[in-house]
Each structure stands twice: as C-alpha cells, then as structure tokens.
Length: 440
Image (tube, rainbow, N blue to C red; front, side):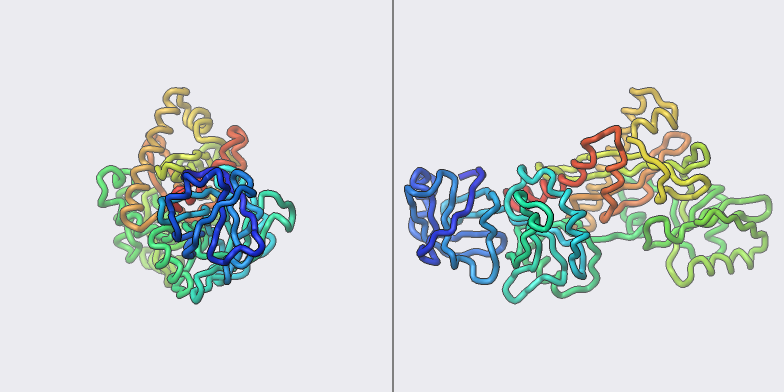
C-alpha cells in the first residue's frame, strides 16, 4: 500500500490491540493476516487488523486508549504503508531548535517552514533537547496543525521518537540528545558544526575542492604571519570558531610595516615586529585564530560575496536552492551586516560585468564546486541536508569557498525579491528531505 492521505478516527470500545481499515481495503491490508506491527515514529505495537464497512474510504480506526504514553494527533492527515508484516503511519519528523525552552516567538518563526505541509503530511513537531525523555522514548513538543491559526496552530503534547530529525541548534555533550541519536541510527541530519580549520584540512585532501579553498594557516607566531603576507599581500585574521564576522580583522603590507583594518573599520598601522606580535596576541585573547588569503571583492567600497544555499531534495540529492549576493556596509571588511542583497546572477552581471550567458556559466561553476564540497562533508562529518556556503568570486573570476554554515540564517533568502519563490523553497526543502529520510 502506498502513500495516500489518511485520516485517523478514534473508535469507542475497540480493543486496545486492534486497528480498523475500511472493508474496501481488505485486499490491500488483508496480507497482514492476523497480527502485525503498527509503527508510528519509532514506536511500534503488535496489533490485529480488522475491517469495517462503516469507515470512510481513507480512514484508519484506532482505539481511544491505543497509545499509553504519548498522543497521535487525530486532526492531521497521514500516509500509510504496509509490507505485509508491518503497517507504518507517518511521517513523524522532529525539528530540534533549542536546548532550552521553546518560546512562542520561536514557534511563530518556525511556522513558515510548513509552507509546503500538504506535500509532507503527518506529524512534524518542534522540540527542545531538554524535552527528550529516554525512559519511554518520547519528546515533549509542539506539533504543527495546518487547520489551526494563532495558538491553535500548534498541538502541545508528548510525541514518540520520530522517524527522522532535523537539527537546528548546537549541542554540546548531552546524554538526552545522545540517546535520541543512537536510537535513530543516522536519521538525524545537520548533526555536526565544523570549524574553519577542520574544513580547510578536510577540503585540502580533495583534489576537486582543495583548489577552491584560500590559503590558510593557523596563526601561531610572527614568522607565519609575515610569510602569509609576503605570499598574498593581504590576509584575513579569523577565529577558528566564530560566526557573523565576530573577531575578524584584515591585515596588509604597508611600506615597511603593516596596516590592520578592524571589524569596526578602525585602521591601525604598526611597523615594529615586537608590537605586531603583541597586537596579534591581543587579537587572539587565548583563542585559536587563522590567517587566510584575502580573496575579497569590493564594489563601491562594499564587500561583495555570495550565500549559496545547498539542500537535499525529496530524492535525497544535493541541489542548489538559491544563490544570494550580499553587499556589506560601506568600508566594512565583512558582509554579515548586509546593506542589500540581490540574486546571484544579477550581481555577476551588474558588479562583475558578465554577459547573461557568462553569468549563467559562472553560477553553474559555483554550484558544481559547492556540490563537490557537500560530498566531502557527507563523507567526513556525517549526515547533512541543509548548509549555507559563503563564496567569494575574485577579480580574476576564481571561485573560493570561505565558510560553510550548517546552522545558516534562512531569512537572508527572504530579501531576494527578484526570486519570490526562493525563500519558501529554502524553508520547506529540509522537511521534504526529512520525509524521504524517514522512508515516506
């Protein structure tokens, strides 16, 4: 039996180990013969299948006391599959968004992820790491209700461990999360948050991707700093672990000394080697830093780079959902505080002066490079389905991967007004992938 759109009906007086299907489906579900397993998320129960001519065509009847420690929302549409020994109803998908309390503001921001719910169906719930209950394999969460509005759009309840999970939060050592991850056995995606040094080391070993990574060294002592500047003329100093441009600085040779441009646009010129060393120690403040070749591109005194959103689709293949050009604030050395955005092809034509066909080919090259990088992170760091690349295109039109973000800000796509469908696709695609990962 494949898919469909099934509704759940609670049947009073039905034995707690029985389920009902319409008589018209006897041929399809009759192969279960006697008892079989009914599975909802990670929970399963041995049941006996019965048939009734009173049930609507695409309904499944379950007892009122069917599930003892959690709830199966009966106002949602589900898909049902059977292989003769097991009946699966779902999908059941969890979105882990925090380690603390799930607030109403969080729920309001995540409702847009269900813009394509009709293609997903089933139970998709928002939850916290702290809501995981290993003793009975359930999670306290908020199930999306497509028929509700406002507060009624969420079903607050306890749900079973899911078929698949999408992680949207950082997790340090946590026994609750570990129990869920072990139970799902590779059905959680975006499980690792890599740092810049790890990516450099991993990509450098891949011939196809390595040539698109800027020269990068761990910032240790002055000789390394001097060597990188002699080689590239201009470098960025970046924390190994960090985001949003925090702690980033730029350095370049200036006569017999060095010119540092700080995150806040201040400029500091230093000639003396010992003072440079002291300044580098001050920047680091005990943290690990990288020195990275400068491959930036400036247009009208604004940094320009590209956010490339790579996601797996319902066929579980990497595709590019969107390329967004980001223009930084005037005079700033990073683009995280964007002044404006456009779709990638527009920037390639207007900023880089490419013709339409040339811009299309460059876009294809960017997507190809990022797809190769996705292959590497899948092989090296585990399962991913939604990542954001920060990509630079220099004056020679070389493509460079600056960073990869497994917890990237989806809202950037909402500002790309030239493509009105991009934002909706960026938000909905991870759930489409999660559904396929769940086996539906």
